[in-house]
Structures are given as C-alpha cells and as structure tokens.
Image (cartoon, rainbow, N blue to C red; front, side, top):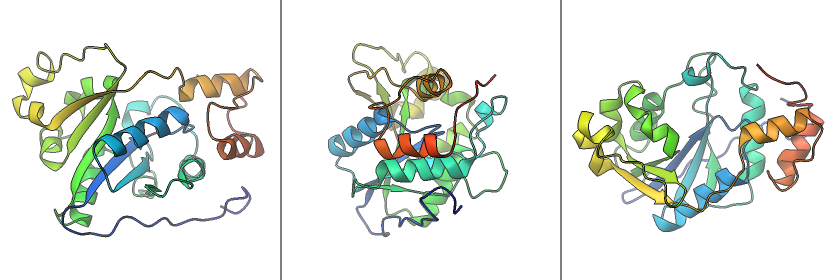
Length: 223
C-alpha cells in the first residue's frame, strides 16, 4: 500500500532462543486503541515478557457476518500504534492468509513451530473471549500450546472453574486471570464517534487518529 503515508513495513519477530517469553495479543484492531496498549504493557510487565506480538486478524470467523475494515488498514494502524514501544512488534501471519478464515489454533501452531518449542507463549485475551473458548476451533489443543491471560476489570468474577473447568479440566492450569482497571474505550465506540462526526482524540494514538481521517475510515455506519 503506497497512498497512506506509511508504506510497506516488515517488523522483526523476536529471535528463537531458550527461555524466551512472548505474549501474543490477537484482535481485530478495528481500530486499535489505548485500551489495547495498556493491557499489553501491563501483561508484559507483570509476566516479565520479552516481547508482545500484536497479531491483527485476517478474516475472523466470529465476525463473518459483520463488515470488517480491510486487513491492510488494520495492520498499518497497529504498526503506527505500537512502533514507539521497543517491546512491541506486529505480525502479518493472519492477514497474509489471503482471504482465508483465521483461527487462533493456526496462529499458535505457527508460533510454536517458529520458536521450535523453546519459547513460553502467553496468549492475551479478554474476559468475554475466554468464556467462549470452548467454541474455538480445536480448543483442546490450545491449552497445550500456550498459557492464556484473561484480562478483566477488578471485581468481575469469571467463574472459570464452574464453566470451562467442568468441560475441560486441563484448562484450569493454563488460564490465569489478570485484573486491570477498566477503561471505557472500545473499537466500536471509536467507529461510532467517527460516523457521528465526534472527536476521537485520546481514545487512540495520534498517529492512528490521523491515519483514520486521511484514509476516510469509519465514515459510514455499519450494519
């Protein structure tokens, strides 16, 4: 893509080595916002991760009925949002699967193969997503490939033992819950404000705000 002021970027993944600890931050990032960045940084610090790899989804199956912004736009916005943090990087592994539905299991298999089993992998996700994990493709294998960090707001009880644990007991030792003070920011809110002509400053990094306006994203309401 050459008309967006960013150009084509290839970001480097952390080198394979024993003892490497990597966080995988998956998401549609439509668009990425400050809440995503706060979560990634807090998880990185608390779990002493070497890197957090942001993985924008290509064509997510759980949003197949809703229009999602072109993957290249979402990738470039994620690059702009994370480029100033030396501990963050962005992977194209999902958006380069041309027009295929992208599943978390495939992404985790990729990174496990890439790191040859030498890295400890932590998949960062939200409370709502983790409670739906039993509907994910090949969910039983997921827990053998990584640890899950379920991010939630303080005081919110996920009750994993009574839900996920009853169906998949081995999951309990692979899911950890991390409370982070809630931020009332969401990608949906940002899109709605653009449609309504309201400012989105301080909801997402300035570079992402400029990219959205320059490329005319989110100007029309979605179904």
